[in-house]
Length: 277
Image 1 (tube, rainbow, N blue to C red):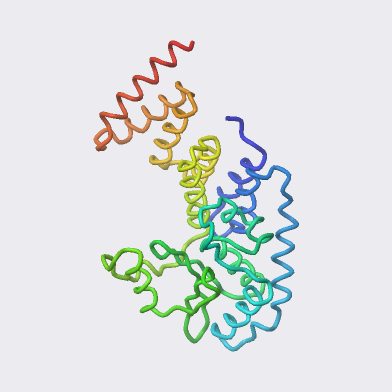
Image 2 (cartoon, rainbow, N blue to C red):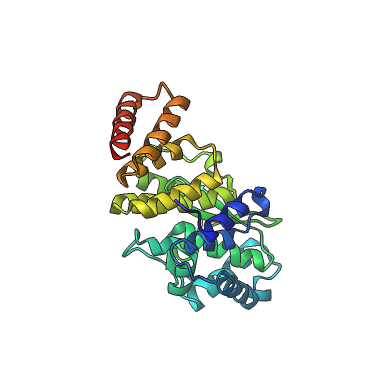
């Protein structure tokens, strides 16, 4: 697969240290694979405009005042909301669509929340709770957890546990590690993982493969993405490329539970590649 200019730009950006990655621009580069004519500057300017509108309304009164100001701007004035009607629409994961349509999934709405807040001088970080992404605003007094998918609801630790109970039927207890800040590359990886899952489920293997390639830009050493790329190549009848990836995966994980099946699949793909040639 020939690397697009957008993919090359993305790869160059995520090669930087995590703190130097521009989350908004990188998110727009992900969208640029779907929208080749997308102009990132237009959407970055939109984030700048919202941050300017926020202005001094965030105040110096701490995280709670900042949350109230952000919530008024984003959810009351701008009308952002969680897409509960069509959660798995891939547009929910593209930052340009989220900004245009004012709707998205937790991680994309959190990205808007973080990027507007950051531009306004606030300290906002992502928190990857199992099954649900939220944000945390820091202040000298006390941090505040916020759920942008549900209109900026402020969360207590008890609220977080109740959400885990709903998702995992009481089998998972909230642990401090679950509240750790999520780095920018990890956020991008989670976005791409969502898209990959959506495309695989829809049988759209070309788009799924694009997501995998961007995931591998984030983590070139990812063994799982190497395997998944091989599986996608096989689905696209790229027999030699598929065999090479599966063989490379097995060389790195020879004792994995799926090794016998993957070895047989790789041999079959090699044979099919030979017949084609």
